Length: 66
Image (cartoon, rainbow, N blue to C red; front, side, top):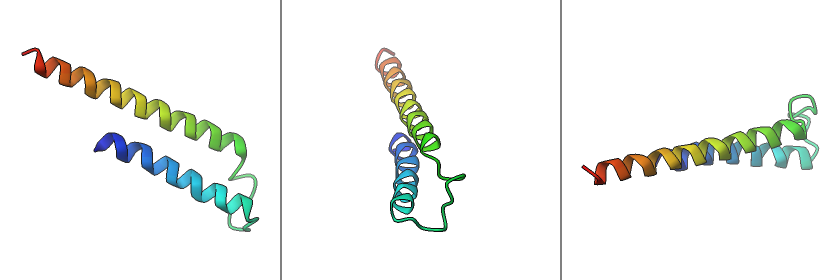
């Protein structure tokens, strides 16, 4: 559950910011909503999700080997 929540939060916030950028909303100035920041935050979100997944699988494997 924690893995899904840690992936869904950055993805939803990136989706909202992308929506604001595409519609030209004044609430999201280019300084705060640059494309590079989104790519970096999305990459870090997927990396953290992958590492949480690996950690969960290793913990289940260790639990099963007891």
